[in-house]
Image (cartoon, rainbow, N blue to C red; front, side, top):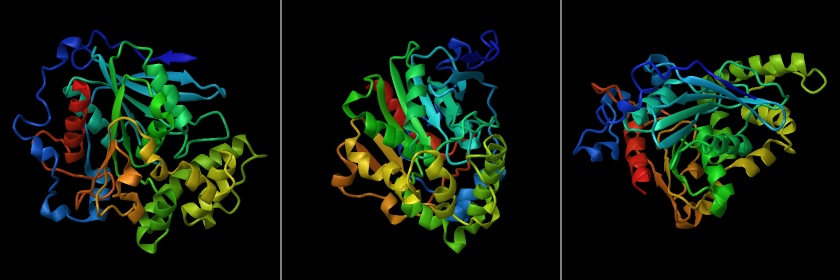
Length: 352
């Protein structure tokens, strides 16, 4: 089942192919180094502040996307946001844990890529984006079958080049997908850029279990409780939320819900099988990992520095600052540094 959104082809702006190339590139000519070396405002040189600032204060304006719903083989559905402008290049964006396709970091990158001549597809993981999915399962860090379906659906269009981008959990998902595809990856997929990647899921769970990270866990668990309540009402024989309020970390949540609902023996089994860290060397296209050293979500293992771990095609950049999906920049055009870095990477994909 495919449900298309309203036709906006008659409206001006990104829907009009003539718009391509008429807006300035988000990285001014001669300033590419600005996109390679991040220096935040002095008052934002802290990992926690960088992590919460965009959520609290950033708003990005972008016209409404064309919405499409595609069916999955297990009688579920995925919700996609399309920003089309007649390009032959497409970027597919993956959000983070308990995020959705219209979070500010997703819209911010979509705006930058649209101005750089790309079509953009931002998709929602199952249960995200304000619409509960139909099956007991929801999403997890290794649900690459859903990303694969989105990619295959997108490639039925007339695109000669496709790039992937992922934030946080969506970054791990993107890298794991590329690794699993290996040599079989469609030749039109040029590579991927990822930010704030918890590629060591067990280590990241340990980091978020620390008392100093309690503010993040409380928010994640608050949102997840709403979803699990809805699922328990629909599937009472499979899901029991009795005692949910005693959960304090992902060790407990993933043991009780993520693992059993998605075919894993335990949280540890889930983390081991779905962490991209051990599979990076299997990637066969250019992949950029950008993770800040002060990211409060990431363990030391999330910063692999040996060729044996990274393989030939993966590059890690670890700016000193940036927090978790932060990389805040004060600029007249409203772009964040991560968006400048991504457009530089994608411009290389377009030429390949």
